[in-house]
Image 1 (cartoon, protein in one colour):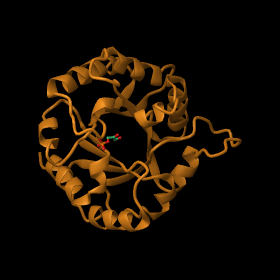
Image 2: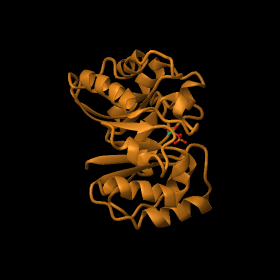
Image 3: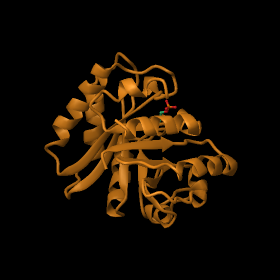
Length: 235
Ligand code: 13P
């Protein structure tokens, strides 16, 4: 599997919309691209996948396996409904107070349950020092000793849902610093880009040194999403 495209449906959708989306995605024939679909927890049971290229993920996970955790969902529960991945540390959760420490706990909980984290990192504003991105990554995986798998989504917060995207040079600079650090860690990783990816700009961004995309808004517009997926798969 060469490229990865993750759909983060956030708090969108309905049974009707997801039926429509899945009808189309299940028919896709992909050569070298894996799709990871991350619906809200409640809809996981409706995600009947009949396509080997498609995998399921969730948008968040409990930081503990302690059952006295009202409102939380454990990896064991998510796995029972087919989820193999979980987004962790999305900026929309960090903005609710999720700390690097909580994110580190969630990654540990996921890895001990054989689920793969999709860790989101990214600077808040355009003028912020990019060292923050590397620090978010280091804090998230601090203390992990054994070999592990990780997907990192570089999502500059200022690019999420705004229609603005960073330059390829900017994305390459961040990806290079993350790779330089990760190449010294016992980890298999992929680096994705997320933030305002659309059918109009994905080809440009695909020229940067990344392994795929994390897509929000456009993942709900299934025809445009499929255009992106096919375009990437045919590269
Ligand atoms: P948009 O693609 O809507 O900008 O969202 C990106 C994102 O937050 C994916 O996690």
